[in-house]
Length: 465
Image (cartoon, rainbow, N blue to C red; front, top):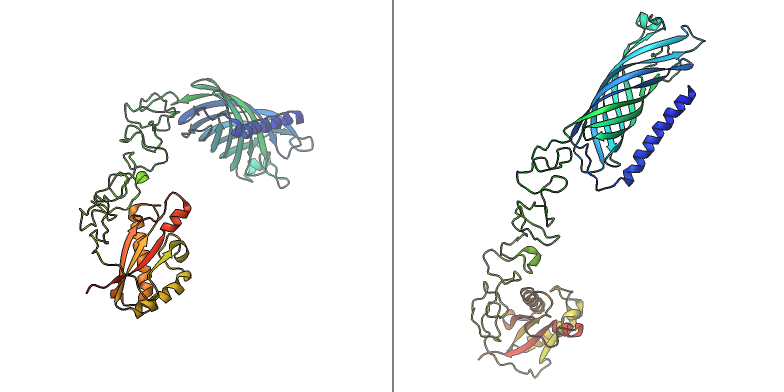
């Protein structure tokens, strides 16, 4: 008997090892053919009880079950089982009276299933669940054992079930099954005796057949049976992949039959129609738009930036003088600057250039402390020469969009003006002129040239008389 129990344990251990190992090694290109199907199963086999009787006898049990396997596109699949059956647990012990017993057991229960596709024929599985047992301890002559006869305990109890098995597919709708399991009783009275702290239990080894329903049904008629179909409600006529889901050629998350932009580049965000997002509605998709916050209704170029027809650096929607001749210096409104005579100041300063890299934070308009001593000295000169006014010109390199550079140059020039006003210079004597990238003094193709182009120039202008 001990030899038989050892064989059962080896079988259970072997099947569990196969399941665990195949979880990592199972091929990924197989479709789980149990998906979304039912299995009607009938099984029979032997039982071996572990009770308070010293020796064990083999008896038999039979079981019927219904399994449902949830839809799954992977090798592993979960399911739920409802089962019922009957059988016997026997034992013998020369030390006890009676020396042998035979307990009839009826049971009904439910369990969760995990099955693994190794190939298109083999499905090892694991079942864990609960059942309700009705048991009737008797001796070999069919007489009720004493405790059962006097109602000393309940013969309607909860039990815990575990099972390892293997399904071998014989055809699309039929499999041969092998299983080994254990049932742990909720009390210690399967043999009518309570001894020790452990509850009675029994092992089973069984074989049977399963008949499958739903494996060949194709509800949406897309050519993929429901058991393999991860998208079971695909509209008629739509081309699908191996999982029964509508094709999405550009992988943007919108199936081809709904996709109005079927060749969207990889990684581009799209709307519900599968077309690239255009957040500012300017007709240039976000992934190509260099100016992605253009105001509504503004005409843009192919880069999504506001149009600048006369090329003066001021976009048309802000340009109050839209037909300025090419090369004409303009103000922030896009209108030509008044021609004024630049003079050489005969006092301390003729003109001044502030280098953008050493006097401003990178990419910002905030002044660095390096600029303070120079501007303090310049402020004293400006206050001492009230007959002059001053042009504060902002310049940048050509990195970034024209609109961005124009705005940065304006902000840097304005920071200089604000500082000088704080030092007592008359605001009316100061004028901000942003040029952006339009007036380089060196090549923008080298790092040294771009550093020279990032600057603020301060020039003295003779007041009109």
